[in-house]
Length: 376
Image (tube, rainbow, N blue to C red):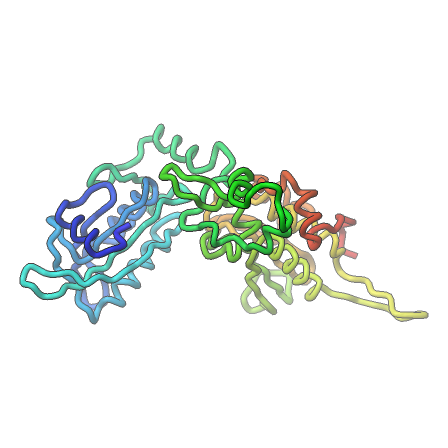
């Protein structure tokens, strides 16, 4: 969208429409006065809830280039990132580009092009407003429209088969594909990936990876699905406190890699008392097989349509907790043990789990059997 300067100039001449919004910028000593935060967040939300678009900062409503002060560009960029991260729910990750365009007096004016892609989720402002883009303006979604949008964005059918904006065949790991499908499939790779919905054709005719395809077979899924990872931490006490934090890690990569890393994390940090009689006999705090199976289930059943709802794995002095919640929801780590996580976690089965025996067989690291889950 607006990849070349000529496309931008043509849009400025044509004016605002369903894919373009112009905003002149007024600055104070340390902040952006106009546009105001809620209005700018609303424009981003409207584009994300429709088909995407771009906001041109430094251009007035008539399409005239006014430009931005070059020594304040960093402040404006920081403001944009802050608004899209904290005033949009779930957060939006725009693409920010700089362009030099001609002012009416013939001088160069700096313009920021804020590109907002079509969202995977239904977005709203931090004030609770749901917008869509209609022509050259945004408007509130009526309840029936909002219900339909939630349905289209994955609430009423398999969200994990939806396409991931910006993710293509190049984002898939060939070695993982060959491990799962075999190095010489019976039909061409392209046809196989479409048939198994690892790749999905969009309404515009583009081919994108599906959510499940990227999570299970992607090279770096978190590039496009930023919260699809496990946050792990160890605390020396029985409470969730930064003062008692011993070690923390973000476990990323494909889901099979996350599962193995999570299991290894617990195995590394759990208590391992032992006694010596004729020989050493260890009494590990937890059954590693049970931990492994619990993480497999958390990854397979997590609702990936909940933006920002990363999986959390916490080890305390007296228990272990496995959680899958939105960051805005209050969580009492004392109420979430492995034995109870099924009822507390958001539940939506990852499609690859429908072929779980095959997936486990091809990725041996997730083929362990669940054993007793009580700590010894």
